Length: 165
Image (cartoon, rainbow, N blue to C red; front, side):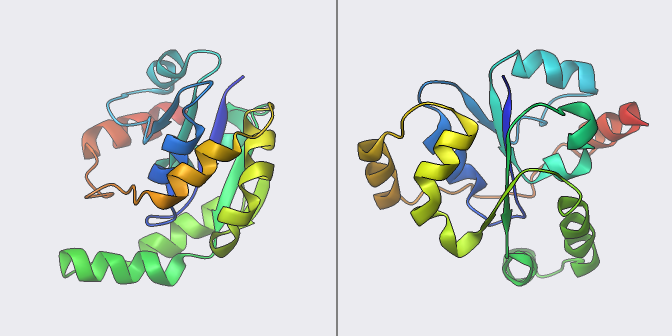
């Protein structure tokens, strides 16, 4: 079964993708390179996961109704600040729009500041096997993050969104 982690930029989706890639594979930004929902489903197969900001663009309740989902909350200001700091310009309305879409997604909700203490619960919810405490501790010591979380192929994302309508 597929599983998903959804969060705004800078909400540790890259870290969680690495953490969850152990018994199963979890993409980070799995939408990248897909031109329609069929390509995305084919890429995921029947048991891969995806940890991504872009998932908020999909109707996750409709497209993957039975898949377990974790939604990381509480990073609106940080996402906006990061955009300004990194790029010198940014549209905070876009982050607000993504955040509003995120609240429509059904799943386990975790506050950003609670991720580390909720790792066993996140693992059980998404993977369904006993939590690997050593892996969790190891990855907590690592600083994994993408260099440019906004580096999307814009045409691919547009085509994917259009294929959903």
